[in-house]
Length: 155
Image (cartoon, rainbow, N blue to C red; front, top):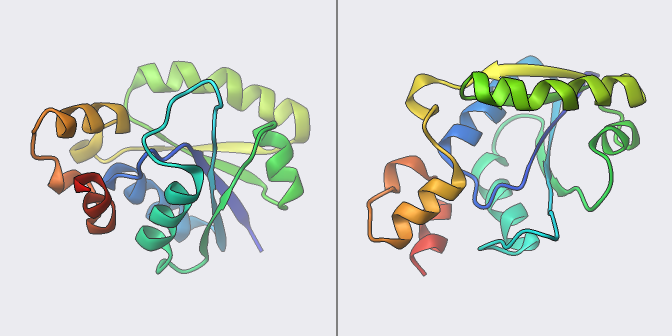
């Protein structure tokens, strides 16, 4: 069985994330969506809420599950869960330049490979931070979020 991890904070998950996770599910037998928390960051949603939104959004995809990553190295998380690959979505060359050193280090630490998937052009401008800011200022971002997430954002 080929298992991959799609890591991220997913605060909250948006359609760009969903597109990458769905494509990963078509390439691997199992995909673990690892919901991470950086305790130096402020999140709009709790870890439990973020995991729940991911589960509600992608839980219907074959072989996809969502779990909290807790603190620690992504490479160790992958080893612990028997994952042979990390799947990352790239929006631009800026993302690529940021991700390459981490991919190299993860491979060096545990042998886990990183697979880069280019984001669909409909989503290359998206980030959770940007979408949250636009929504908080009254902008309509409904087309970029799954319905379960939009309901929570409007509360």
